[in-house]
Structure formats: C-alpha cells, structure tokens
Image (cartoon, rainbow, N blue to C red; front, side, top):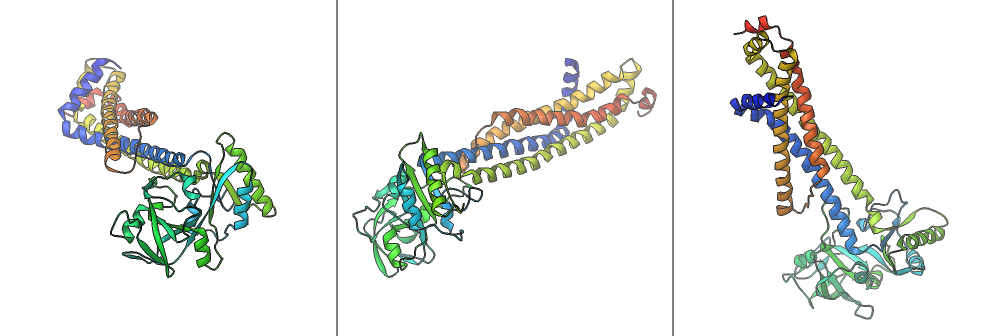
Length: 401
C-alpha cells in the first residue's frame, strides 16, 4: 500500500479521535491480557526454579507414590498420602552409595503454647541434619544439634510471631504434649514462590524426631525423606540407585519414588503452564472482539463516506484503490492499538514486580507475536467493510448525499 493511504487513514481517524480510541480499546485490552498472562506465568516458573536451585542441585526427595503421582518438594507434608514411609526406608536411602545425608520429615499434631496458643500448628519432626541439607539461614540462634537437648525447638518466622510477642524468642519456652521445649533458633524467611505446591515452612515448628517419636508412642510415620548427594555431577545416578534400592526393599512395588528436587516440581510447572495457556486463550478472544469492533466502526465509516467513495470512483479510482484506503485505516487502528497495548503491558510487568510478589518477566516472543496477531485480526475484519466499499456502484454511492 502506498504511503498516501496511511497518511489519509491517519487523518481520517484523527478527525474522530474518541471513536477511534474506543475502537482501539478492544485491541489494547487483548494485547495487554495476552502479554501480561504469559509474562506472569513465565515469571512464576522462574521463581519456582530459583527457589529449588537455592536448596542445591544435589537435593532429592523420597515420598510415597509412583513417578506419575509424585507432586513435588515437601508437598507430602500435608498428610494427603495414605501410605507412609518407614524408618527402614530411611535407612535404605542413607546406606545408598553417594548419599551424604538423608533426613525424615514427619508431621505431628497437638496444640502448642508460648505467649499465645496455636491449636492447629504445623509441626515437623526431623533430625539435626535437616538444617545442613537445605542450607536455610537462621534469623537468630542455631538448629538443634545431634548432641543437644532433645527438648529443643526451632521456629519459622511466622510461627515465632504467632506464638510469642517477641520476634526473636531465643531461650523462651513453649509447651507441647505437656512437655516443656526451649526455643534454640528461628529460621530466616523461606521465600516460597507464589502458586508453588511447596509447604510453607515460615509457619512451621521443628522438633527433634526422637522426641516426637517418644511422644507418639514410637508410632511416627514419615511423609517424606529429604536427601543430599555427595556431588552434583552424578546426582541422577545416585538418586536412581536409591530409587532402585527402595523398590527392591518394597518387593518390586512402585509405591515409592525418589527424584531430584528440581525434577519433582514438574506438577507445579505443568499446572502453571496449563493455567497460562487457558487464560491466554481467553485473553486472545478479546483480540477477536477488538477485531469485530474495528469491523463495526469501519462499516459505519463506509456508510458515512459513501458520497466520497462515489466521487472517487466517478473520477477514476479503482476498486483496489478504494479497498486499500479502508484496509490502511484498519491497519492503522489495529497497529496503534497493538503498540499501546505492548507499552502498557511493559509498564504492567514493572508494576507487578514493584508492588507484588509476582516477579513477572518480559518474554520478547510474546511481545512480537501478540501485536502481529492483533494487526492480522484487525486487517482481516477491516477488509470486509473495505470490500463492501470497493464494490459499491458509483452512481448509487452519489445518491447517498
């Protein structure tokens, strides 16, 4: 199309600014919705991957269920699994060549009382090696040691705030199962990413496994085993060996699964991917609605300018020239709307990162595909009124004055 067509299209659209802006609004909203949904989804995936990387590439998880039913890092702590791991499973993992550490993770019940009382606390029973496996820094104090008092307890920052009026309640006592425990440490904040299936350790109360076992009458089920290999280069092989040993221990039954933490979070990634695709598809409908809006406005424009069309055709304008003029207007409308939508989307990504926990990222592919798709939709729907204008008989058009 000639440059004159775009210049004339821009002039005609500028003459009706309010109508042109309202027409572009559907394209703007559609482009923004598609871009923001994809950028937020990709950002959340990267947040989850970054969180798992913080624990280390050689961290693995053992939990009940097959590989197909495995749901991710620390998710078994919810107690949703009907089958529990045993201390024999823990011993099998610990004896696997290449495994540096393996610790049990169990949940126990019972109200806890400090300055305040929690009736349904999130209590995790584990061994002293837990701290060295996850490498989580302490806000204050230390994790309980193998030679320390079995009545020691470590709190997450959320649990510390709920139980005590002091955010760093080192040396203070709390009561669980009529037993007195001493707070020896408080974990720093666990930055769990949004939409992650990972348990919230900020609200957790950590007690020694042996103490919890005694309080429960030596019947303490293990929901998950957290392990660490001696090296990252052959971590896959070591975890595979641990998985094979567990399957053999269970008589060949695939009712237990060992997997690297980075691989065990695939369910979260799949869920986020499906949600992103679903919402992006719904947002793409807004682009189609915007295209329909362009068609409606172009039809009105053709009707209003019928006399102009008649004059142009009477002095020699061809059907192709008339059609190009109106297609150029549709192109300018959808193009400007797409550019504005991309600009507002980039601003939205910045606002999400600034004011929320959603660390959205710019995905350049969608910044290219979304506006091109919007322009294609706009031109497609705009070509229908343009075709109607091009086929108009000049005599009939002149009678519309």
